[in-house]
Amino acid sequence: MSASETIHVDGVWRSAVSGATREILDPADAKTLEVVAEGGVEDADAAVEAARRAFDGGAGAWPRTLVAERAALLRRVADLLQRDREKIALIESRDTGKTLEEGRVDVDDVTNAFRYFADLVINESGGRVVDAGSPDVHSVVVHEPVGVCAMITPWNYPLLQASWKIAPALAAGNTFVIKPSEVTPLTTVYLVKLLVEAGLPAGVANIVTGAGLPVGQRLAEHPDVDLFSFTGGLVSGTKAGAAAVAGAKKIALELGGKNPNVVFADSCATDEGFDTAVDQALNAAFAHSGQVCSAGARLIIEESVRDRFVAELARRAERIKLGRGTEEGVECGPLVSQQQLEKVEAYVASALQEGAQLRCGGRRPEPSDVRPATGYFYSPTVLDGCHRDMKVIREETFGPILTVETFTTEDEAVALANDTEYGLAGAVWSADTARARRVAARLRHGTIWINDFHPYLPQAEWGGFGKSGIGRELGPAGLDEYRESKHVYENLRPEPVRWFAG
Image (cartoon, rainbow, N blue to C red; front, side, top):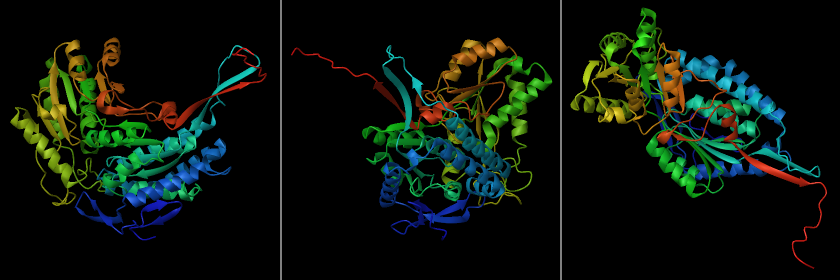
């Protein structure tokens, strides 16, 4: 297979029908990392047709494969992921810019997702019995696969986000076509190779590498697609979602967030508490250089501890070691692209123009032995004195930018945290358990952490409120996104109805 044969359709790896290719750049130095196929509408159509045949086939088709066999395949994939852990982590690090350790964590999380959905589907009951009030009627609600699933994944966590869709879809008995981000497609291609190696039948898993226009748009509107699942930006997601809705498809959209990290003064009453809250605020904002949909980019802190907290936050943010993710000791890698770098610079410039105070960062760092001058690096940035009217507060920046807002009362903290069109995630820090839980209950966000930030569990649901999206991933609800419910009503002793005389 040549480097540009990254389209997999009906069990065959091939180039794009047009012959077009795309260079994948290493964000640490802007040099070419790989060359992949640049698919188009014809490639998307071929992939959907293959997935349709694999779903609609006879007795041996994937939807009619025994649940135990589907679960066993997912476990084989998990084992293969661990076998190739270091190789995959390296590819993910070089493709996205994240550190090698972050890449390893991603592989482990993906492994856990495949194992979780294998266990979940095999341990389910045969359906929910509905009491029809008669011993002569057997009524049961059962789950069946949706059909052909089209999946679009983002550039920041390409492997992880792919697993959140692929694992439950296969567990439920669906076939799929996946389009990874055109910026970071390499580990998704590798994952499809592992699915093939694990024994997945031809046509069940299909991948088309290429741009959102035209590939993603075609998948969203294709009449033979039954479910459309998208993770990415609000603008692209709403457009693709509208195309999918026009075809009456089942949809799942995860569209990002602008996530509050609410810190009450009592969480900082001890030296240990203060250090932990600062450390987690850094983790919330600057993990993967802030390129995280759940990043705690909005620090909302009680006024009485603001000066001390922000001073220490800025001091430590300046010490974060930036560099190529594969280098020893590096804590943050580059941004994913030149476009993203320029976007972050524009947000910082607008914030300063609107009156924000720059406490640290706000610039491209000087080159070094681990930080090539051509790389897309930007220093972790803390902007103090921010308010709700600022663009940097309202919009998802997706970069190493932490804004600071203050409050004096609990009601004010809740109002600030909820004053966003997004609703993906958020956190509350307080030594008062009752208050922490009370505030968490009032926040309109899909995931709330108390005295922590960023952990997630495969068993839990992941989704959002407002413009953060529609639907749920992970947990039992994540499996149900890829199934339909069917009510089977069986009358064991049918009799004439005799609605009409005669």
